[in-house]
Every structure is written in C-alpha cells, then in structure tokens.
Length: 110
Image (cartoon, helix red, strand yellow):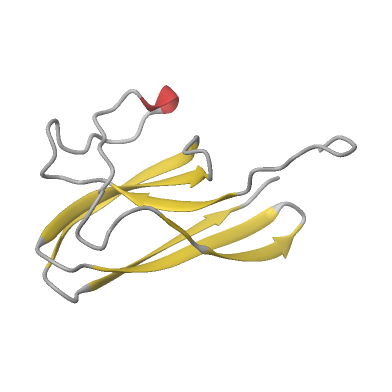
C-alpha cells in the first residue's frame, strides 16, 4: 500500500441464499454466477475475526447461528464495501433454528 493509502480490509463473510431466485451458482472469475446473499435468518454478512499469520497470509472466520430453517452452499469473502475478493462452494448445508455454521477462510499470498 502506498503512503497514506486507505485500506478496506477483506474481512467480511457472506453466505448465499439457496432459496433466492436463481439459487447459488458455483463461484467463477468476475462473479458472474447466480448469487444472492442472505439478508435474514441470522445469516447476514458479518465481519469475521482476522488472524494475521504474517507475510501477507491471513485467515478470517465467523460462526453464524441460524434463527430459522435455511440452506446454503456458497460463501464469499468481501471487503466492507461489498467488493468480492473470493468465493467458494461446499456441500449443501440445511440449517434449522439455532444451528451453527463456521466459515473459515485462509488466504496465502506467495
């Protein structure tokens, strides 16, 4: 980062709402897949806990608690402005009220 450059940390985690129109597509470059983040169900995007592992490597984790039935199979890692840094898919998860899911992103820069 340059002298005095503002940095918007990539520390927000978002879950895709499978029930939304279009569902959750497999993440692709340029983010052109179908994707709608949760805006309810206790699964709205959250700033995660960051672990700086040095040399540009870091992890971001957050444990979501569902407050109703919900399903997800895609997560995005974002900055505070909502700009996507990365996306990943995983096996479909069906959550019930009070179920928890922990998302842990690990980023290695080499």
